[in-house]
Image (tube, rainbow, N blue to C red):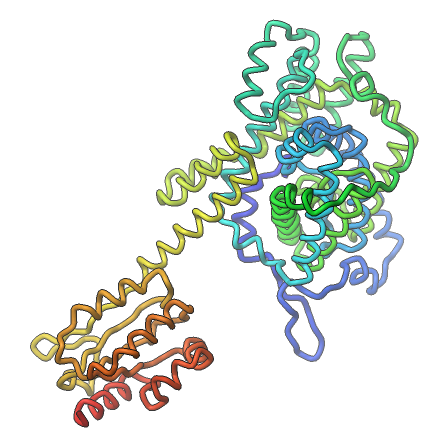
Length: 580
């Protein structure tokens, strides 16, 4: 998500999240592909030295790119830089070994910055460890239960709204280091943070601001005139050289957080209790949801760039395993990274081996080059995050939604405001719920129930051989899903009929499905047949007919009164009307 367009790519990815993979003997693959790591699938066909050479170059390149990004995410999230480096190493390696994508690079991303900062502020790092552990378990279960197509159920306005909110929060979180403000622990709340900034603005450091500003300018120039050069890497190197050459009084990673230890991550089991799980579970669900969305989205983007097909359910299992491992070895939440994956592809990657080499490259930096990484100025990393925040803020997508239906832009704005004012967890939940309610309202409006009336012998909806309705027969046409959102319309339509009705014919040709509420309403309608009328169903589609049979409604109605066509239903209705 860092430099890419999350919401634009999401729109591009809709409907492509669960491709079908080849299965022998003409059978269809389960949705989301088989439960098999992509690494095994590609290595089974042979792996040449030439492919390894391309993977090595791509892995080294993306590993170098990942270094400044990981440390920038760590500082923005309120954790130590080494913890994000451990995430890139541990989670990146596990997901590369088990993942369902051929090209994806996983690690810490900007999507988690806001929620991680809040968790660490409220519960400390140990609380984040348990939250990540729970989220990893949820992701793995989601893959095992074949929820790999979950991305298409997240409304586009919701993702656009919370992405814009995250971008603005990330931007605001960098202002302390960007201006060199003497603030130790800024509050996580958006407006409270800006109050603290304004109170300390008179103590800003011109030297720090100069380093941050020059780093920002260098990255913008690199992106404009040399787009193949990793702008974050160039910007961080430039800022570090300026501070070192002129011995500038600017905070670095080592001066504020201590030198990055040249050691491997160690195992750490968090304190677990029912009370802590209940307290952290909502945040864990949000992390799992965001990790699932972004990882599957990254897979789809990689597929569109290469023509490959990922295994979405296996990818969720791998993301779960990677997050569990990351939480137990000193890391933070991880997911697929769109910008690093695109860099991996453009650098010539051929297999998941490149993602493995990426993790080993970061490990090499930690073990042997930690003095260099410890000297990186915080002002330069703040400038990197400002660029990332701008990349996440999709102005074109926002403008497009604002010109769309009121229901869409209202959901987007509500999600955006809640992300800023409350928190990301509430914003995502409320946004999805509101979008679902508005969708159900839209569906209920699209569904219609009307009585077919004949005037002067003209009945357009009747078969040609049926010029008029039999005496005492009333025909109603239902168009759309028969679900809880339209039952009142059904009841109102039938309430206005005459008391002389002998037979009701319900034309259900355009009813693709029916839910339990619709079944209940039909049962209540049938229960009043003692009042003297009969009911015949016409042209019931096969899926709807199966539901009616399973729910016992066909048995109550009588199989003879469920006809395959409107012609047969009218003939049956005429027979019932004459028999009375």
